[in-house]
Image (cartoon, rainbow, N blue to C red; front, top):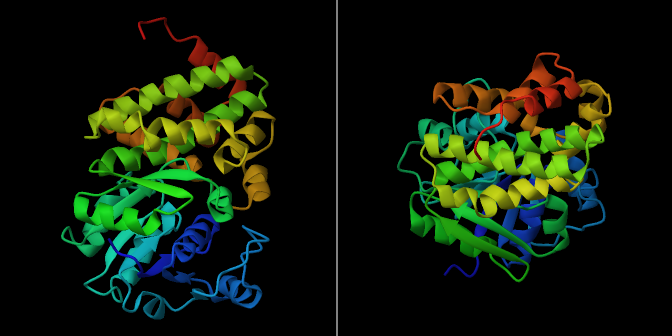
Length: 333
């Protein structure tokens, strides 16, 4: 077990900052990197991320900078927590500087925009298939992790030794990390739950109540599992932290930006106004399109995801979208 390590966390949003705080509190030397010097400067000056996690000071062992080569020099692990649309570009920049002895992990949730590719596929293409890689997912709001509240996540990797190394780094008094060999299932659960959280938010924004929310979560889990099995995931993954755990979290709590986005849409706000009010990336909005393309490629029916896509990208009225779902022919569960 690695008792102390040097880790670079890539991404100064709420999740990247929370992971950097967690790792520092676990006794590791952490370098938090952001690509934009203007965004990084106030974090260095104020020693906290006042935009996303105000009131939580940076420990002395946490440094912040905008020079990627400096951030990853001699690290044991680089942990990416950037939006999915920036993931490939971050890896392409990282490829030049990451030590060959370092491992990689990512806590990014989504599919690559435009290609519907899993992020492990993007990683293999950019870095090669022999690099030790892992994905981190599970029910974990950044604010609660930053505050040190109890949390559990899953670390999935093809190399279980690497999964265990990453889990040991994350594991501490307030976070429990489990390991899994199901990279595809863990990635898919983390992506699709954001789409379903938008659906649950829309239903609540329309005032449809707890019954509708429970039905959406349950049937959403069913379509997540259908697609997951079709692309090679394991059924038990969707019954665990990276599946139903993350799904319940994001569909039921307003800390979820995807749920808040759906609430705004259900209440009649435009997508542009909702994006502006949230002020952060809403991964589920783009993932709806990519998940639907992936599902059609594999011949999988995903009615909830399809209606979210129709509302967000094709002008469908949210109330009509729910009516279309309810009007589907009855069938065996």
